[in-house]
Length: 142
Image (cartoon, rainbow, N blue to C red):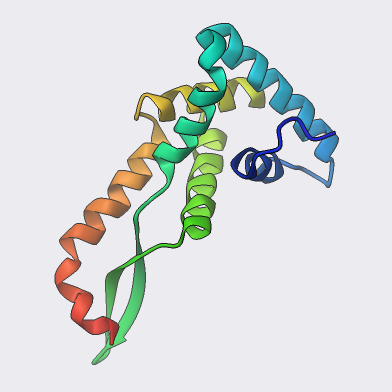
């Protein structure tokens, strides 16, 4: 009973499965789609996809040890790897929100991600700032 046949959406649904109950996760996702449709009208699906795509990072930090010192070296990401980082940050940001129902927290975090605000976007920008400030450590990747 998959709601939408899209890789990003399926990974989003699977990331909120609890105790192996995928059907419950899909029901919650249907509520999320309904709320987004109520708020944004016909472009609700584009809002959902672009909110997740806004969270996908370009760079990651890799720990490299050189002469007994740990350096955080920036490296590029593959598409799937970036999506998994984005969904991980999204899950953490949703769980930190104060609303009572999980569905409401997910909808509000999606809206924040679409508007390029929220905790998940802060995490993405923090990692990007660290990567740009540590770009002179790229020589340690060899």
